[in-house]
Length: 416
Image (tube, rainbow, N blue to C red; front, side, top):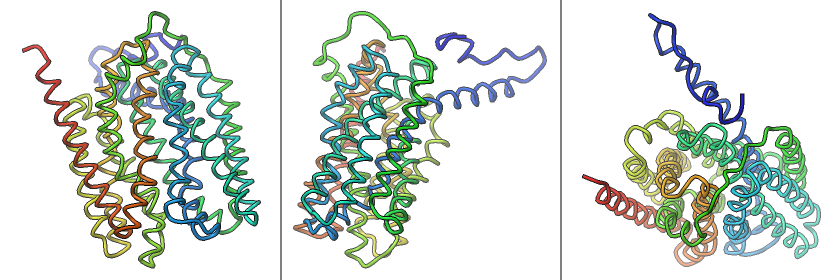
């Protein structure tokens, strides 16, 4: 049975007189496991990202002695590389195959672990340590681009385009699930064994995933004439802009929550990322079918409204418990933003351009991470740490307005 065999994605016919519920549940479970077998590579990529995420800002700021703006830039520099390499990753996935993209991506993630470990071991020589950390982030950024784009397209190609929303949703569960696991694990390991241990774990896990990818079946590339890059970009850009602004709430939380907690003399900053991740996963598992039922834009509008409430509470939080609850609300609201808008973006391009469209669309989330570091860092320098969440709230509300406009434009363009 090939990857494109309809029997591999269609439920078995029930026997006469029997209920369809049983076969449908079995089909859904089989489909879910099949999707997971591809998006697991995204989990590994974001585990590599999550492990140092709650550690590096404080490490750079307090251990190496650099400013809060520089600490934010060290996090953001990864997303420069990711954003710049997204179109290339999409091109590789469309023309060379998603499997090649994943193998290259996981190899680069393993290399980033080597640089991260070196940065921890050489902390006494500040500029050398900082150079290794920046190299680690840059290499990891390209690895993320190749690995996550390839894994998503690999999954869609294997189970069929009709399951695009589910593949994107499961991919996101792996993304934020890995962050939720990686952030507190990274803090524990750094406290007990030092930053170098995070590099060793990253290199080992990513190297193992390269072997796993090599062993998986290749999905044939869709051949034919491809749309020009500019044409794909023009179709995806409005949706990507909404994603970028809508993701600022999470970007600020991930980048500055540690320093926000330190400024308030609170403990448990990593738990905020865990709370965000758990709420995010719960919402995706519970409500992923709403995209197929109601459409991408209505779901995105609802989710962004909820996300804005969470960011608002984070801005006004006066206790770690309030911040924890606010992070959960933010995660719950942001959960379906990516797949809901993504389904609308991807359907605007032909199948043979899906990799490029996915790469470009996802690249806009990297823009939000890149811009949040220096811009929110500057806001913090002028108005204090809490002001970063007000900045995020404004961005989310602008994103909500963009989605409403896109929804109205799409509705007007549909035949009566």
